[in-house]
Amino acid sequence: MAKKIEQFENLPIWQQATDMATAMYRIDSRDDWKYAFSIKDQIQRSALSISSNIAEGYEYGNQKDFIRFLRYAKGSAGELRSQLYILHRSEIVQQTEYDILRNKLLEISRQLSSFIKYLRSRTQ
Picture 1 (tube, helix red, strand yellow):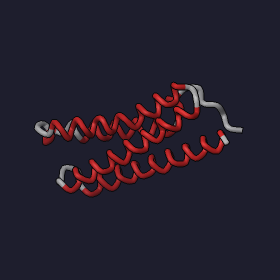
Picture 2: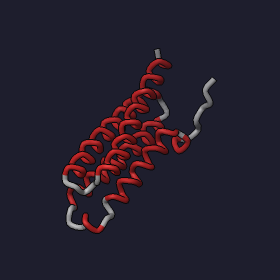
Picture 3: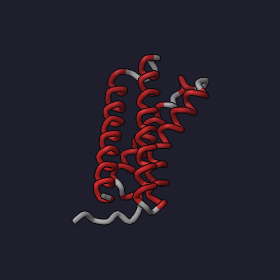
């Protein structure tokens, strides 16, 4: 029997999403970013949106809303992956760092998909 999680902070997927947001904040706090305001803002919002949507959906207290917000979080993970790709192509993010972050984002997306499928199976 699965243990009930009492708060969103205990969800491993939320913890991974906050780790990703922290990593992205470290990237865009670099000195060579001081004039890239618009992309910096967009990346920060995308990165924050993943964990924020997980938390918001959880706090609604029902599966239908939680699933909807998990889908939003998954969309934000895709958006951030696209932005990361542009940073890589612009040579702001080097290959090794890009590979690590991209793989983490792909894993977050996979886990969100699995979590959504699990929750849907419990409602049927």
